[in-house]
Image 1: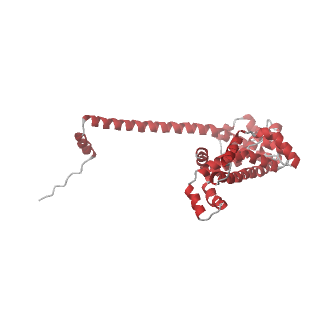
Image 2 (image 1 turned 30 degrees about the vertical axis):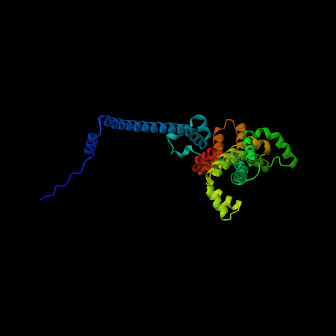
Image 3 (image 1 turned 180 degrees about the vertical axis):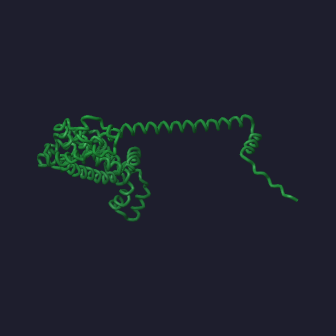
Length: 323
């Protein structure tokens, strides 16, 4: 006798059998759900393409001026004066139209190299000092019990509304009494003091959102507050530390007013923004030099941002909304 093997049911058969067991209303409802699902998927796909196109347009708008700045900075003075930068892209491999003389003249003829070093000397300590101080303060506000903690934190947050410009005259008088005017220390202290309120606010909200069990387990193991802060809190807070580092460094690096007020206009202490402002004043028609100088000032901020950008959104968002 031959065995009869059952034929496996197909999807159509299952759908037909299922429709037989259900009423007309259920079958119509199922069809509507399928059609609505297809419509929703199509609308989502169209929406995603719309977002991509919008992002591409925004990126293009932001990138084109930077490309034009770079191209103009490596062209000869005659080429910059007689034609637009986009004409050079018609023959990009024609190396006779490119030159690095603009950078040589800006860096060594106009003092931009010395100003570049001065900007690093100003920006690095003015970024590290508020981060270190604010991290300790944020840990105290988050995990240490002391009288008036909440009131003191509110005062710190309230200082966010105080602009640095209103403190210029009092700070100049205080610095004058201590002989700090015209020194890098004056700029470090000014940037650190007015950068700390935002840092304390972000760090405290982020550190306060960390799991309490981790802190309590460290206390059970006998860890001191410093050991807990250095070995647990700091490694866990890298995203918010990196996010604030971007903000503070870019703010200090691109600052002109504070450096001009507290350092003065001496060539030995001028920063890149002040050097570029002087270049604009003395070389108002030399666009090839202005573009080269502007691009020099952009290099370090771009390196800092792209080096830390993976932490930027995560750290900034967590520090802003968690508490």
